[in-house]
Length: 487
Image 1 (cartoon, rainbow, N blue to C red):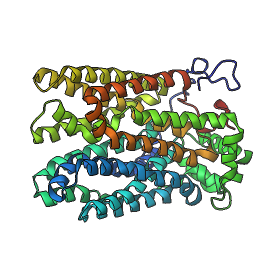
Image 2: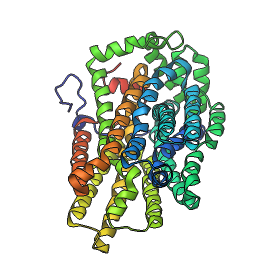
Image 3: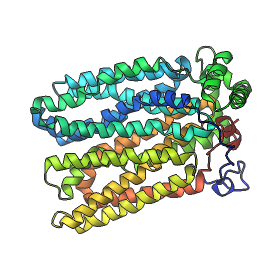
Image 4: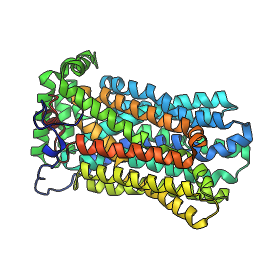
């Protein structure tokens, strides 16, 4: 997949790593920021629903007797179920719009959380995870797509990071919920943990209806006047708004209408391009590979099984374990704020390289420490906890948010919804594989072996970023089609 200077599409990282010079500073437009924040807040529910199992599993096992195998399935299967939402989200967002798709996402979260709260056994919990999983798939697709399409180029990196920071914040809130409600009677504690995710869905769905629709979706539907009005609200200057509209109209008129017309119509012509255009195939392969590595490098073993890892490291107090689990949540959420600031200043590539390099180093250290043994040495155990936190921080400083930013940027307009859906499907498959195999894997090859395995995958991710991903900072979404030869 590496690009060569003499290849058909001269995009070798060495040939196009640098970002274009940024325009002179203009007054920052806060309106698209608030729109992207509101759209991305659904991702809080994504993080919460996925990660709440981390602490709830302790009390579910005591209350209704679920086994380790059932816990492994319940924890990971939500990501497999999310494939349905991820694959439907592109079609839904192209047919009914980005805004209504976000509302539908909140409906799935509402029904899923209620079902899990009232569940009386493993089967009912599986139904609740199924419904919430569809919402997870929808949220992973539509949040970054809407943020990317509403944002001006000057702040697109920042705004497209928002879904990731809200997702990480949702995970952190689930850890807080685990700790706060752990003092309730066993039969209530885990139910209240799930039930806490019900109320926000109603308010978020209502708030989303106050947002403007994506200008690119409006243009695809021939509603150019509405698209122009939205662009003038969401651009930094009037000239930029007019230029964005011209670029969008050019992309639409060059053939994109045919794939999405007629109320969302058939996307067959867009998919035919995957088979016939090398540039389109290359971009889709880049998105799938990036999403594969983001999850295959093991982040969700820490998100879902932090308490087990801490216990293996020698932490014996349940209260201390749940408290340290919150530290993992903070480590996954807070650094994304730094990434949001740097993504449009430093660029995507440097942050991705720093992130994958830091993850590799932390995982190698964890593997070495667990190989030595941590339970009989408090100092080694403490360093192991610090290395685990460093791994989560490194992920959040680049790979976590920027995999979604980069994927949403490089896909051509006519394939953005469906392509983002496929990327999300890859992401969720690998997340499910990691979660559903972790307990069995560390029992088979030891905890040290697991960390060394994921270190090897993180190293491969570093090589992929270095060889295959050109810089995209400061370029318009329409210019991406020229850059990646997908026009």
